[in-house]
Amino acid sequence: MIARRKTRKVRVGAVSIGRDSPISVQGMTKTHTENIKATIRQIKELEEEGCEIVRVAVPTKAAARALKKIKAQISIPLVADIHYSPTLALMAIEAGVDKIRINPGNIRQPKAQEKIVLAAKERNIPIRIGVNSGSVLPRRGLKVIRAAEEQNLAVLMVESALKAGRFFESLDFADIVVSLKAPDPIVTIRAYRLAAMKCDYPFHLGVSAAGPVKESLPKSAVGIGALLAEGIGDTVRVSITGPSQEEVRIAYDILAALGIRRESPEIISCPVCGRCEVDLPKIIGEVKESLAGEKRPLKIAVMGCVVNGPGEAVEADLGIACTKGYGVIFKKGEILRKVRQENLLEEFTKEIDKFNG
Image (cartoon, rainbow, N blue to C red; front, side, top):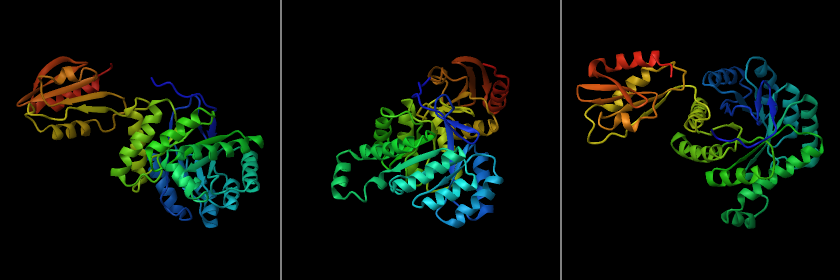
C-alpha cells in the first residue's frame, strides 16, 4: 500500500479531500455553463461514470447566474472555475457553489483576493489555488522564460501558490486546496514534489492542456501516476480535448493501475508470440463482455499459451490459458481443469461467479 502524504482535510460539499479521505475523481463540463439543460445533462453523464466532484467554467455573468439552478438539480459537489473576475467569484459564492477555483496569477490584486476569501469564509466553502505554468510567465518577461528552460518554472509555480496560501491564511482562512499544473508532466511532477515539502495543503493533481486522448493518456499517466506512486495527491482530474466521460474513465484507470482504487476487474494478458495458436484479442473481448457489471476488484488473466500462462499469471485470482482446441482454467497459478475451446468461456464464467477468494 502506498503511504500517503499527510495533509489537512478540506470538505467540498459531501466529499472530503486530503488526510485519510479516498483520492477522489473530478471532471469538468465542456458546455457553456449558461446553457443550463446541457450542463446538467453533462454533469449527470459524468456522475454515471463515477465523477465525484464537477467543475464548470464561469467566464461571464450569465454563467454565474446559472450556477444556482444547476446546483439545485445535481447531486455531486459543484466547483466554479474563475479566472480573471473577482465579481464572478463573488457571484459564484453567493449562488451556493461548493468550492471555487482561482488562479493568483490572474487575480493578483490583494484587495480582490481578500474579498473572495472573506466571502468564501463566511459561506464555509474552500478555495482551490490553481496555478498553471503559463500564468507565472507572461508578465515577467524573457528572463523568466530562460529560467523555465533551466528547470525553474516549477519553483515559480510553487512560489505563486504558497504566496497566495500565506495571504489567505493571514485572513484566518485554511480551507485551501492547491494545484500546480503544466502541459509538461516533468514540470508538473517537480512542482508538486517541491510544494509537498513546504505545505500541508491537499493537492489536486492534473497535467494541463494535455491534448487529445492519444497525447493526454501517456502525459496524464506519467504526471499523475508518478506523484500518486509517491503518496502525493488527494484528488485527480485528467485533461482531454475530447469527451468529459473519457477523462473520468482514465482517472480511474490510473488509480486502479496503482492499486489505489479499483472498482471493476483488471484483465492481464500476454502480448502474443509465436506460441499462440488462438485469436487472443477476440477471446479477451469475450471475457471483458462477460465481466460487464462486475464490481469486484478481481485480477483476471487471459493467456495465449498453456506452456507459460498459469506460471506467468500466478498473481491472478483466476485465469485461462488457451491453445488450439482447448484451454485450461487456473486459480492463483494452480490449474483447476482442462476445457474444450467451445466451452471455455462458459466454464470460466462459472468459476468467476463462484469465486470467493
